[in-house]
Length: 109
Length: 110
Image (tube, rainbow over all chains, first blue to last red; front, side):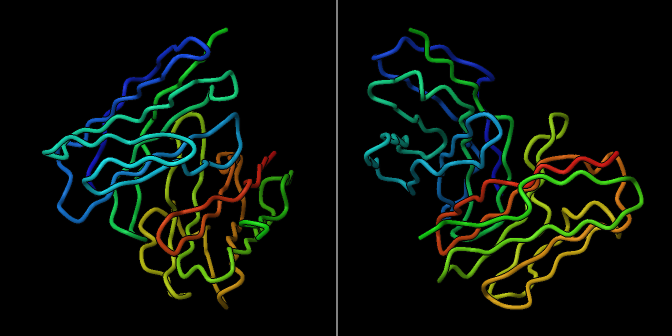
């Protein structure tokens, strides 16, 4: 599986958009980009995933560059409850996954 | 759907004892994953099953760890004998395409 690189931490003001970057320069053609978040010691929560097109759901938007070597998760209006560790991973469907250290997002009032 | 169910939620045991962690995946999912999370090593994949068959157990730390999936609705992760360094949160996840995680079992080995 391709490895990912994320900044260790980011801050965001409440109500503003949070843009979390991820580099996955060794991604293969059949590997998807997945985003999860983990709040305290709860189980990781699925957010969104995509192959090459941009995706949007009720939680977030995912922007994948044309060369697929990087992506950005966008939380359009961050709230205090969005404070969490955000993980970007790449894998084939139902394949083996490798979680890195993620980005700790802190949303501040 | 109740989601992935794990039991127990917390387990405290003494070194040398056998520990069994249990997981009920989401109905209809055909893949099941066991992870371990510690501060030092982060979230590590231990083993995963597809259609009840173990596909990759390269993440299992040593022979003290074993996992089974006797049917599509149940899996166990066993540690025998347990050691203090096994203390961690153990997560089970299941998937059809997207992995959904359970709440985890916090294991403390004294």
